[in-house]
Length: 498
Image (cartoon, rainbow, N blue to C red; front, side, top):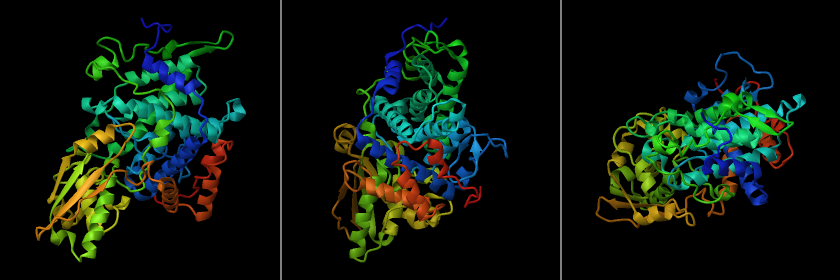
């Protein structure tokens, strides 16, 4: 029988200790978190406007259901329970692959966690009359910073992808930890909840890889958020806290102390090839400090290739050359993760295929002469069926550059480099264009202002400039109750067909 007094695995203890005891005091980190929060919500509105497929997933499971004091879904009039709210928000933030990204041995998107955080916080904020603590925006930002950190630190040296496991495992783990804290669970209960997150069955990466790449990769984060919230609520309801002794008894929610390390049955042995899960460095704030924002709509490992392609397109235009007519070959040097994730030949069957194809991104950019946009990946985009795109894709070769890979994995450097070289039909080779740090990288001074402008563009699909200004002002009011902040995103009548 499991012993609820047994020592929990160090990975579990360190996560919970960080969430419950580590103060976050750096105001620069909070400012980046505010921008990241705006960015994620802007991505959600962009998805709602541009993706009919995702719109079909949003809203109550049973049509017409309205949950009293429930979670408001941005851009809609839907009011749902916290589990469905976590799914909807997580899916909307992630669906078009336009939210932030963080790299390591594993890849991921830390703002995925906001699906769980905002859902639980909005629900809790409306329960204050029933004696619940009323979370503020500052509460959300702290949970956000910590979820980013847990996910990013565990991404650094744990390649779940090598075992076919999708990176949303870390969304589930991080979101479970911070939602347990938001719900006021004692630390012992949070340990149990996080152990349950690790021992869940975990999604396979198959929906991100050819030939099975498909739209599930867009809602996988929502699924992970929903499960995290479910586990936190199950732990809250299934366990028992005795305030007279300040002790928590697991009862139905009893945790698994050796969830990772148990011989044969633990995560490491059953699913991770017998390897230890490694915490690369102590939890702090470095993930929020260095997260990559997607100012350009491209899979993160290809953004710098898109920037390079814009420069090549300018060279061609200056010489009155036409990409599909005058180019003989296109050589792309890149990092190992890009080769694994987005080096894709053969037919592209859907939006999910296209937005994870490096050759498609570069081809469309060369033909447009400007960066690829979200709409350019959609099934009804003219580029999706343009034979010139396939002509250029056929002229491309993609190779790994060892230095790019080493710099990518170096936590002190963290480049996401690509280099594009074009040979013309005349035999002339244009100067290679190398971009190491793409726009959106923390080393680029223009990143945060450009992310705010991206937010304005996305919000303009459904909100007036005055409404957007109010939201941008509100995000700086740390003591604003979450229900008031989320109320700014409600549309009593949706401006797109749901």
